[in-house]
Length: 149
Image 1 (spheres, rainbow, N blue to C red):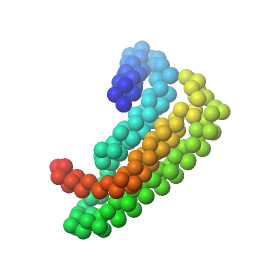
Image 2: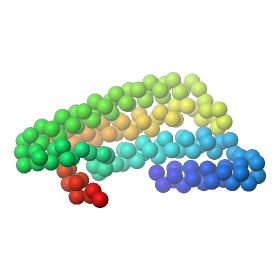
Image 3: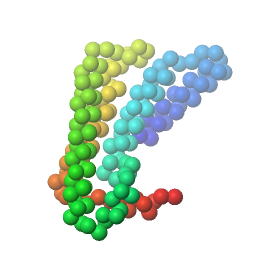
Image 4: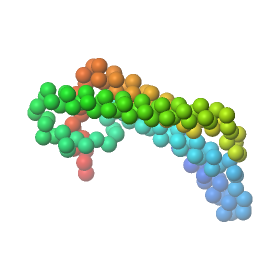
């Protein structure tokens, strides 16, 4: 993620300096920045999932905290929903990868399959992690309300 951000920031900075300082820019900067941004977002989403860093509505579950069996059932339902949602996004991303195999980006010439590919990889990994948590019966982390400022 840091490498994507560094290259993206450098490309945009150089492009801005060239465009406003010298009247010309680097056309590849925009394509490169877009590609790196997409990869950075999905790498971050994948890394955040096992840490429980995605947005959670724990306030809806806090009143049920003392009812352990109910919380475990809800955790299973949530994980099943995550697997289903990740599976649907992965399926759509796979279809876009297949479509993108036949076309190239305008300036850099990379395969357009590289844009939806991180969504496919990320959703497959998130679905696998959610399934693993489901099989292990891992309880939900309801301690997020302590982090609210």
